[in-house]
Amino acid sequence: MAEKRDYYEVLGVQKGASDEEIKKAFRRQSKKYHPDLNPGDKNAEEKFKEVNEAYQVLSDPEKKANYDRFGHVGVDPNFGGGGFNGAGFDFGDIFDMFGGFGGFGGGRRNGPKRGADIRQAVEISFEEAAFGCKRSLNVTTQEKCEACGGTGAKKGTTVTTCSNCRGTGRVQTQQRTILGYMTTETVCPTCHGEGKIIKEPCRECRGTGNVRKNKTIEVQIPAGIDNGQTIQLSGKGEAGSRGGQSGDLLLTVRVRPHEIFRREGNNVLIDMPITFVQAALGATLKVPTLDGPVELTIPEGTQSASRFRMKGKGIPYLRSKSRGDQYVTVNVEVPRNLTAKQKEILRDFDEDNNYKQKKSFYEKMKDFLK
Image (cartoon, rainbow, N blue to C red; front, side, top):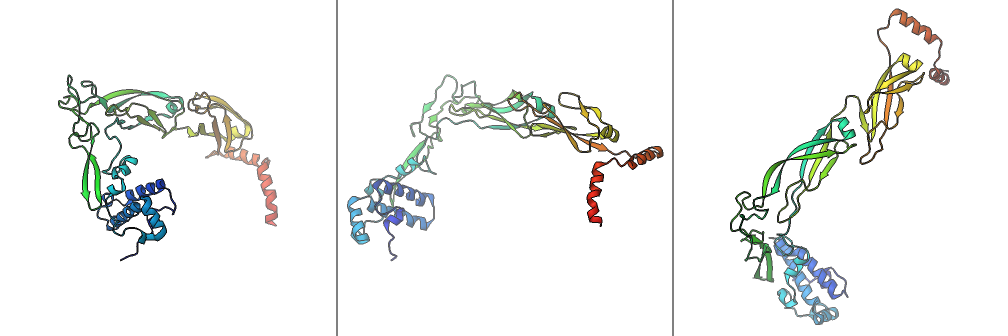
């Protein structure tokens, strides 16, 4: 026969642990190895018996004192494996503490239940995302039945409390097993966990208290919303049951890409081509913005890929009057298919060698060309 483990080790507590610590450890280990939670697991069943035996010794002051002095020989060898009633402990206590576990105890199951959330998407333009807009959405939801007021009972009749479970929605049964008396809790078969009986169901909702309806919801999409962000409309989802509150409508925004503008945070980016002459001599350009065309001065000698900031011409911040900026990147377009005269003019211009970056670069190259 295998040597018995130390009872303190079985429960996972130190020697000298208080009665409360021992009791808490027993609850924890009992929950872990209970046969109903480990069906067909022989190892768990043996562990469960071992935990029971350890607790019945350590929970008894006299037996605990003998065990502390003499070990296993100091306690009755026939004591282990008895029922829980001898230890003054009911398994209902274990599972009531945890608010229910599987088929076991605890917790009201037939109280108010919140309705489900509804998820939907809406597509808007770049400009609508920037400045906000309104949308009308068609949504199909569960609504409280107007005919019965959400009770599920035919108008003029009442809902009665289930006599089998007394309105709890759960029933307990007790069985005698080799391990003692086991108390289990299951859904009431009479009311199916509702805790109430509807003798004459409402014809409109068939006793559910809710009916499916199509409705139109007006949604204000705020200025500055970005692609992929979600708007939460509280109480616009599915109706709750048993007096529970309705769920929410979660509206995900999809912003269509723009032909010219790009978004980076609350800033707007735009690439704008300019001619070689405009870059060399400078120019005043009309630049498209979300507010319409705005003039932008390009200084002479502007290089390709230069970036200009247009303050306050970006996208509004959510729930704020402040706006981001617009950044214009100019790209110098090199002309093609030049005439002979145009080519000659450019060659004459090139001979002036009025290129500071080019001159600096070739001066640095001299050391590599030696």
